[in-house]
Image 1: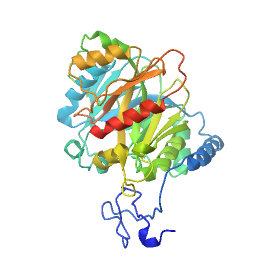
Image 2 (image 1 turned 180 degrees about the horizontal axis):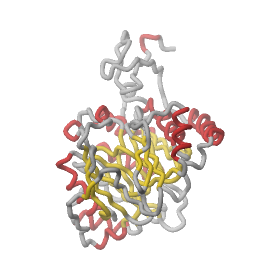
Image 3 (image 1 turned 90 degrees about the horizontal axis):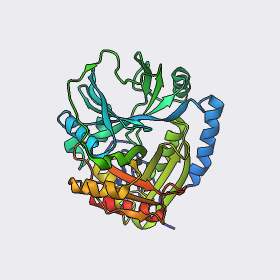
Image 4 (image 1 turned 45 degrees about the horizontal axis):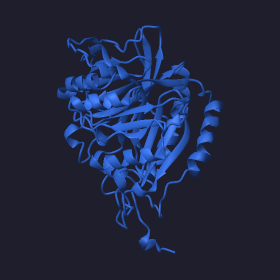
Amino acid sequence: MKTASHEPRVCLQCGARLPSDAVTCPDCNAPTTRLIDFQNSDARLLREGPRLVEERKRLGLEGLVGGLEFVVINTEPEDQRVAVAELLSRTGLDVIDGFLDAEKRTVALRVSDSADVLVTSRTASSPFATFTDHPKSRDRRAARLETLAFACTDLDAYEQIQRGRGIEFMSEEPIVSDDFRFLQTVPSRYTGNSIGLIEWRGTNRSYRGPGSVPLDWAFEKPPIDYLAHVGRLDHAATRVRAADRDAAILEFIGLTNYHFEFAIYVRSLNSITNVARLSPNEFAMVFTSGIAPLAGSKAPGPTEGFIRNYGPRVHHLAWDTDSIDDVYAGLKSEGQAFLLDLVGSPEEGLKQTFSEASPTTLLVNEYIHRFGDFDGFFSRSNVTLLTEATKKQ
């Protein structure tokens, strides 16, 4: 048995190794927490996940939240136009609107049968600023996917129940326009993400809020044939610290109608890919963490290494495609670099790849093609190769 002097001490807030006599973390000032040979398993998720679903039903939350409606990607002000142009040339998205309000400048993009993407740059201070002070994100402090917003059928009921659970929101009241009512949580301490809830008030799904004015920017979708094969937003993947993995997933389950479905462990890379889903054919939320914390692991692996360099954040957006070979070849011909070649095959049921990260958003694009009657979500071999490729970041 190890004595107390050999027990690894790791900060649950930032993952830093702690001196034996520390009362607070010297890196982030959080109260210290002792982790003795900490290793993730699915035990807590399998126990607490169903309990949270039952709690949602008991409180009246079940059914109030639907699928993903949009995501918000923020950029440095000088990078916003370039970020929009990148999305136009690398996905099926097209610009549907642009506007300016008191807090930010917004360009909205859409592809059919998918969540929308709002690319923003702030004119006011950011509540996400504390999550961007990391070695490889400091020169793009504003750049991150900030918010994932889901449909809500009764925002008043949702707000009342969640405030009763201790959930904090960014505003005292919902933001109200002619077309919607909107509320979002404060950024999660585990992921740096905010969860938004939007209740539409009619069929005109405009994101313009009170006091917004049109933006006089013009964008043109490149006339590139292969972009027609890039479709809906399939999933987003958030990197979280090993010690925060369970808390991050359970928090998300408590804020949405999603449930924890499965996890794929890649022990050789100290990594776990966890999938939460609403239903098989809708947007999925993926959480990737280490099995052991960075400070307590002899081989930290690319997942914990990414978090050390960039902090907890959405790592990539995955776009469904029905012709991945054409899309991959076309993007490469236009100068897009990738972290790895295509992995998988029609015989295995799916093919995937990762682009290099955008310098304006710090996001990777994944392209994924599921073939025929493949009814899975990922394959272990592909997850291993994709995880390993992030070493290059």
